[in-house]
Length: 205
Image 1 (cartoon, helix red, strand yellow):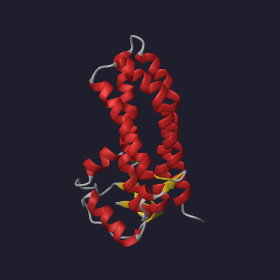
Image 2 (tube, one colour):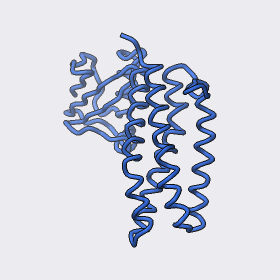
Image 3 (cartoon, rainbow, N blue to C red):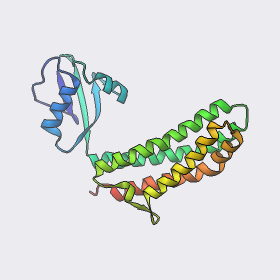
């Protein structure tokens, strides 16, 4: 079995047919210290999150090559914040077109797209405490333009509650108005908040 970490082959003796979880634990305990595994490749195939989770308890073939990449927790957290910020910019660019389709015959597909945008904010809601844990700080108590991020989060929840109510009432007219006139400003605000948090917490060289 060949195991590499950040492009360097490890000289450890890995047991034949050990599980992927055992291998990752061994590498983490022996080589990573305060770093995290960010990518796992087996025989040239990069494992996505679902594949990785499904394969952790499976034995690794004796002839396999496992290539691992690591990263510093703080670097990963700020990269995740910037990635989410970019997704909000992309969502903002799509909202007017989604609103147009809500007023056309393409309503079911447009509603699915609204759901995808809402899911992005739900991802953000979960990511903030997770990134804060990696950064060893409370991102929700940090400020953006004089307000705590948790106050901005409450505003977000209130607005998304309006969107959810329109969806549940099947009120396409109100939903289209919210998507056209309310969500763009919200997406722009969270694009700015996330970039601000990344800039404030990014590790300095």
